[in-house]
Length: 76
Image 1 (cartoon, rainbow, N blue to C red):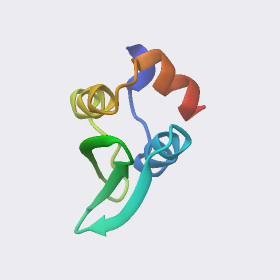
Image 2 (cartoon, rainbow, N blue to C red; image 1 turned 90 degrees about the vertical axis):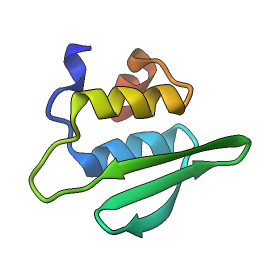
Image 3 (cartoon, one colour; image 1 turned 30 degrees about the vertical axis):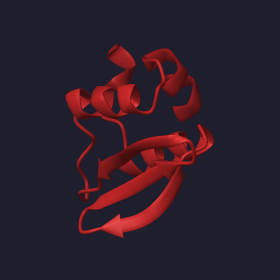
Image 4 (cartoon, rainbow, N blue to C red; image 1 turned 120 degrees about the vertical axis):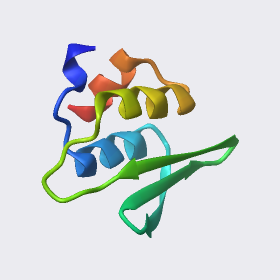
């Protein structure tokens, strides 16, 4: 899981979009993502100049039904 440090929130959103998730827009400082056939809603915090925290990212990856390795391949 070393590849999950200091990830840019905008690139994290793009990686989930590559996995089939759709951005439902910003709600405050978070981007909400949904996927047809999946009841989960992913919420990615977008705070200027701050990366997504590792523990939160792992949680969202799990909710998305992805492995960390799959996510990292989508991120790059």
